[in-house]
Image (cartoon, rainbow, N blue to C red; front, side):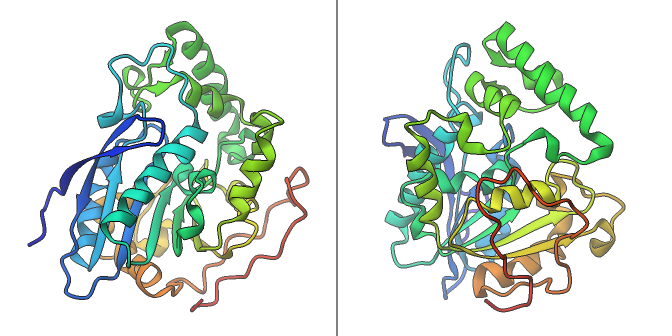
Length: 322
């Protein structure tokens, strides 16, 4: 019997920090795989619980969790807490993947990553064990990649206001502002000061190891972009994908009209209104490795990424079965 709210669990990271999460048991006689859901920055794991429940009802074991500093994984005080995005990947995601492997060692390992959650797996030492990833608006917030019409507003919000408030309070008070959950200072600074080349935000000594971990990932990736997403633009998605140098990737752009809506934006696809549309279609990729949207390639009307970290590689266009 499926536990409708999932089973509360604790996930202990290699550095001893414990994360709060939920494990959703498969409701099928033929298991389809084991899924880790990686949230967007400042979004509680419970936002993804309806989708986790949906996947569990279709034969998947699903793990949801909050990154350190967020929700069930928040310490007594965030002031002066310097957790970084890299910690969420190197420590938190890696521990979640290990936990799922211990629980379901023989099942294919799958990742659903929203926004930064689709980029974090590359930091993990064990990410080579991932079989497939479904990413939605996955990028790392380089400001020049924001949609041109909203770029100035987003620059002022996330790259000027956020670091100023973080310096003042010792953490980012996003919940008070109604923007996000509160963020650790390190994460807020990562977002505010991310450069075109991600590795330049890290020490020179750490860069080769970080790039090597991303290169070790060989999973198939279905990268979803939304045409009215001001943050996860085609340019931003491709910039992030370049770090996964040895994957086979499919790039897809969905418009609100494709899903019968006027607007989707950066967050909406995980709302339960999509249960009979996008969610159902996503099962084809997670279960069978089939791209459900072969006629929806990511837009080509963007400039070349001249400041990319690697020589541009040829991505396989969306054509159906991997």
